[in-house]
Length: 254
Image (cartoon, rainbow, N blue to C red; front, side):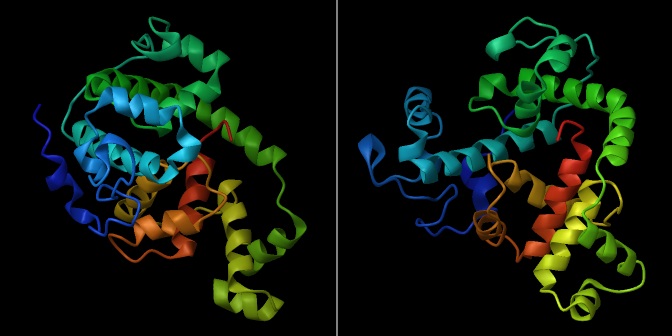
């Protein structure tokens, strides 16, 4: 399958060379003066950058966005059939049954599910692994989510917000409780993550934010996520919080 040029896929991004993304301008090494999108095929150089993550954070994050754009296009235009007998064909568990690894190394499986491969040659096998992991999660999910719901009681202050949310808006609750709106949003996010509330969010909005969230290893700070989201469409902190909460609820290993 022919994946469109990176220039075509990156049209949704602001072309400001100072912002993290495909157009980010490299200021060091042999690609000094080039955009990140101009060097994504140099496997050896990307490997070297990956080993020096702390020194080149913005370039690494920009590369993740480029990889994610290309991999998502590949998945959207590729049909596969997988079952739970599939094997990993790459990485630490090459030639091992994914179902076995799923039981012994959940962290590794979730990293495969949430990340995009660095190289095109891994796209198909990575996609198959992701779909297999999703199927394994679905098989185990109901039982684990019930246990999670039973064992994760809401904090006392979130319980109050939960009850009020049945009849009041977030803004009305904040006014009634004399809290900041952001605080009430955090309460609602906890309710979503622990299964007490189901938040309605369009697939388009959820998938857009999710794909950007997945390029970050840490979601404690929302500002960098919002900055990248805003490059395409204005996104609120509330939407990002609730998207992350839904993602955590859907991940039975959180």
